[in-house]
Length: 124
Image (cartoon, rainbow, N blue to C red; front, side):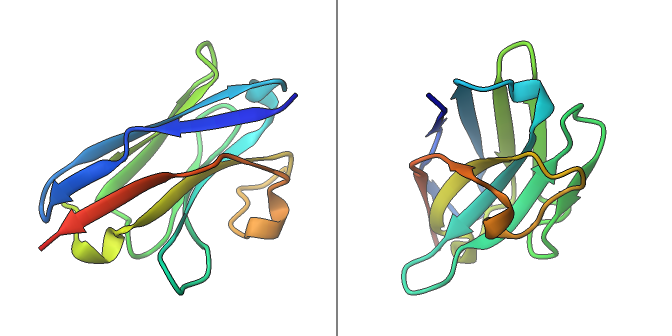
């Protein structure tokens, strides 16, 4: 049974940092591209970052590049999202997802497996 469980969300002031984790189980984690997405109320789910199966390649949305860092630990079956210099516009539910696409997938439909999400709220 595939399971993705996010943690680390919370309330932070603008300019602060948060570190999200996503623990995976039930599939061969090291074979999957892992992505982070977010969804704010009334908005569509949007791509945030993605990391290759090896961790050697990453890609970011323009809105977070230079502030967020995605990484993974295949020995721990965990993917991380370090978020620095947070802004109120970063407020959303954050989801991790797993894809078998050969390239760095950026579209939600490319991900068959999703976590339940963790809320990040950035106050001004």
